[in-house]
Image (cartoon, rainbow, N blue to C red; front, side, top):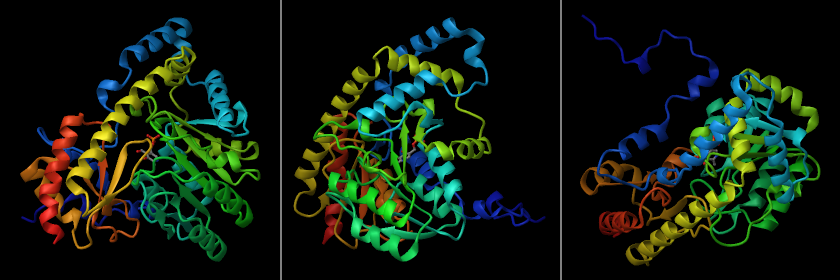
Length: 404
Ligand SMILES: Cc1ncc(COP(=O)(O)O)c(C=O)c1O
């Protein structure tokens, strides 16, 4: 009797073009390993579960259901009070927009997916940073785009000269950048670079998608206006999310869309799903209207500040002199570069099994699929400071002898 072929090796399905590039989710597989009991996981990308405002959110849900009854459980147009709140928050950050241009999504990943379908065809050129969030890769390379990669300076963000050369030489269909507290690099794009990015987007007519789930997670330094704030000509598409500033499980975000594209974006989104949960929109509107977001962010960022400091201190102590790392002013991640020749992907299983510590190998974020093998992404938000210190000491004990 012939054995059954494994499901992923079947050849009798005729797969659509896009799914041929999307073979598996590397991140989900990694995170599964990292969540084994007893493992100190510096591999996550989440807030600490204990800091999520479950009680306050339950009160908001209760209030909405008591006030609106069945209407909160219906198909409905986007919730106006929420769009208005988002528009005024964006205006306060220097973006000229009104509530009518706020399009509610199920989070930034959906925004990436919609904008990718709006502008990009498979085989067309798309620009991303050479190291970037895997979901950005799924929405570009995953759709069969011809990838053009810009390097990133670990202190000031993406290399804008390189970006301009790519725009001028290839007329890409879109570019995707992460402005604040980059995932996985932890770096933010400096203000002067943001201004230049908005200018070259307009000059070369390249839609620049500003994927910004992290800006509210600032715990030090001064906020910088989004790239969208410098956009006079309408070539910057801003994506914001409640995932990191409130709770990932709400699955809610927004985009700022020019009026003339709104009907098309609405139709495109309907091909993915019909709308964002009416109940969630109303409950989040209630949460922000009660003034609960600011104190929540203060608690979250105070915790992240202390944990990031614990991680940077431990890195100084154990990795100082033979490795380098970024100095985030917010967000969730530190990016560590080890001496060339160390392959963090090859070491991961051993480090988890023998030392009980998990990280994400930096190579998982390399769009070319092969560079940056000597790097790692470390998360500080979800682990108590003592465990962070233990985890970093153990990582150093493993990697230091390999550094030669
Ligand atoms: C840079 C970046 N973009 C988008 C997302 C997805 O965000 P959301 O949960 O809003 O879909 C993430 C999540 O980690 C991210 O790091």
